[in-house]
Amino acid sequence: MTPTTAQPPAYDVIVLGAGIIGVCTALHLRQRGRRVCLLDQAEPGSGTSYGNAGLIERSSVVPYAFPHDFKRILRYAFNREADVCYRLDALPGLARWLWRYWRESAPRALAAAARDMLPLIEGSIREHQPFIEAAGLERLIRQDGWIDVYRKARGLEQAAAEARALSAHGLRFEVLDAQALRAREPGVLPALRGGVHWLDPWTITAPGELVRGYAQLFEAGGGQLLTACAQRIEPTGTGWRVVAGAQAYAATDLVVALGPDSPALLEPLGYRFPLALKRGYHLHYQPRADAPALTRPICDSAGGYVLAPMRQGIRLTTGIELARPGAAPSTTQIRRAHALASHIFPLGAAIEAQPWMGRRPCLPDMRPIIGPAPRHPGLWLNFGHAHHGMTLGAVSGRLLAELMTRETPLTNPAPYRAARFL
Image (cartoon, rainbow, N blue to C red; front, side, top):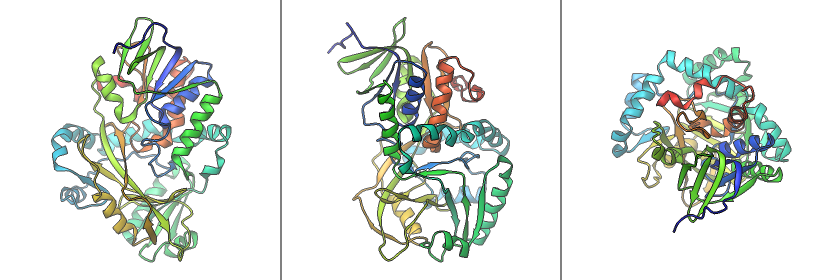
């Protein structure tokens, strides 16, 4: 069937993707007076934005890097760890990406990535706060941080030293011994030797609901939310057209903020971005009636998982699984994480029959793409936020909106330019 194009709806901007990045971009543009259509095939906040650990991670000033410690790499090679697991058939297709990721994780390159990401991390809570207040979503937010816990004294000592090294960034934290940790979270089990309580981050008890609330704020401000699957995008000479089934939508500017699905839509235009997907899982567990409640997220860095109190129950989120894009979900990583988590906090029965799976869109240099598409005027990109989509949604949306409306940007956008990969 030929798409209907006689009188397509006219917008200043169409934003593709109703995850946290797309919704925040649409909100910022609408607040600047643009006529904006937010388009996605699913409900806002129902994808990866729903399934995360619920952290607005102000303290994460160093990106998640590829390890350079040989012993650690050797451990991962045996593919028995909980924090990182892989499927053998995925490795050939990921080899070039992994090699570049490893090079970009060398000390000097990682320090440069941290410097480039710092303005976005520093603005994370500052930019979320007005949206939270305007949407009346304060009930979903806790402002008492999260705790990185350790099962070995050596791990705690190293973490404390690393935290002190970051004090120059103005981060607030407390190092807790075992007794202080149990005083703060009485439910934790004796296997833990202590933790680092990061005090600046905010946490969210229902991430998907937060994104839906932002989308409702966007609609209340005059934005239009449409449910449709964008199949292709086309320049028209006066702007852009999005073809979605039998319908076509037209706008002067187009923003692609589809997270892991962004590259496929852009490839027909000649863009080949090295974006890989780090898959992750979560499963909710009932709180144990005989144990104190968990009041804030706790992260076992060595195990690569987080236990976070959510509306649905205690959410166990996993680390990284590397698999082919179309591979079926696996229960391996959630089982490994649950085995470790059961030794640090008492969990009740699982609430769902199967774990949820999400896809983190990751670029090898640990910086997102935010800005114009180099070869197509009016085409804008905002994706590749890896582990920090929820954290960086509001600040990334503001930065792109400022670039599109030719305002002075909140920070130098050069580190996030798409042209670095072309």
